[in-house]
Length: 217
Image: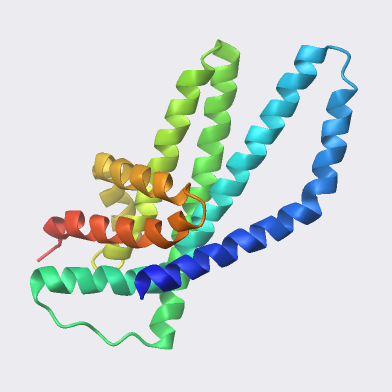
């Protein structure tokens, strides 16, 4: 049920983003027409390519964070079930109020991470462009995306054991775990349709199993 419902949520988000893109398309077309007027043909081609890649990156980033936010109640329940299987503790009864709290916490964490990720990405791309190190900058950006994706997935475990400040400290102390989890999550999420059904549950299960050893007594 977790795979099915989280997948349906992911597909709905995809459709909403596509609808938004449909209405934004005229603005993008206008921008591309302006680029076509650039006298230096090579510069116009590069600008159009960067516009296209930048648009894809923005859409994928929004998609990733919306999935993390709106699947939060389901993934929190899945994480707890996995942890209960590992520890033998009984599952709690999840009510509407707790679901709302989980969405609010997920939105708070996601909002913070999104702002930081966008800021770091912009700085790294500018530095990479100035120094002529665009490939290296792209790799660093991918690592940053993986880190914050893993952060969101591991937060489904952390919300039961750590407060907001402790969660941030825990993720910083376990960057490798976050990057590994988030990297696989992004790879799965990039698979059309199928990824929407697989990414969140697999990442949540893997993150919970791995983080379980760090549970406070």
